Image (cartoon, rainbow, N blue to C red):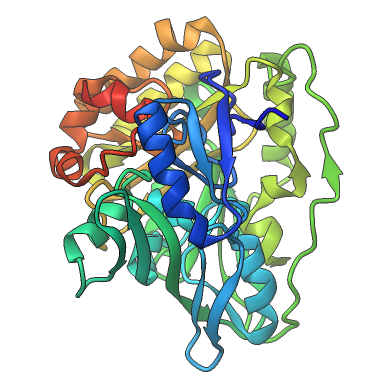
Length: 439
């Protein structure tokens, strides 16, 4: 029986990965070393939510860690939880929310694994308050092909601790991790929603609301052009002080099959964005939402990546430093609108000044823009080079966890600590991304 084949969430680039699943931590050393000896390298693979090629092994053979999904210990007085690396954030929340705890930092999906959250040092709507996920990791167990098992923390094996957070799975196999959770009194979000007409209004709203609320993010109409460039909807909120502590159930909607072509096109994009923008209020309105639609809107549709058809999609996520953010984001949105492509869920948010603990962590003080594009030859030959030039001139950078096209020189300029990570990289581990941007 052949091993199952795995792909990244964007399905691009199309390099299927042969899965070597591990169900028990005791089996990891043998699997890691066998793949190293037999194929030259491997890579840990979680739940397959990385978008580009950072989760694809250079050998196209991965150690599949999703089955390491056990909880090890939890202290519900302090909110300190220890679990294996294959546990998903959704599984953590199902256990923690009824007991009055939430993730200190969460990205826009709860379907990633704990190990993946550390390896990509994910961030969320409260970066301005709590920084990245890695700031709330107390320690973890790391398996390396030569040294064996190591416990890493800011005090023990500190260099490997920093390299592994945001290290794209290249320093070793994360076996388990201990994290600090956030206390909550309710799983509902009390917030504000307000549409804005221009990009300048977004920055004004962000200046005001980010000081008042734990969470803040904006949806941007990536099809708008001219005087409406940068219009969108701002959402800010906090966990409610009263209410139930209910964990959300699984997705109710599903895309049952992959259509022969992408269903995301210029016509459907413009129509959806116009309706979505106009349905939100001109003036600020209070709202109460469950945490799932606030944090994880796309998780409500199972296998939503199939909407992009058999060629898949690429996500473009960049960060622009504060001083250059408004003109650079305006230029990016103008170029995207002119291309006639993009995604329904284009996200704009600002990052705060908290230092990320990882060597290659993406967030820094500035503004991030993220959106998906149906895969086509035009992306790599025309649109992405145009967007990259804007980001480069503004002193910005791209997010490795979402990337499938970044030039090596841009990566090395944006992440000067890459040589330190290379020196600490486990020789048994390598990815298509790392090979692409460092050689």
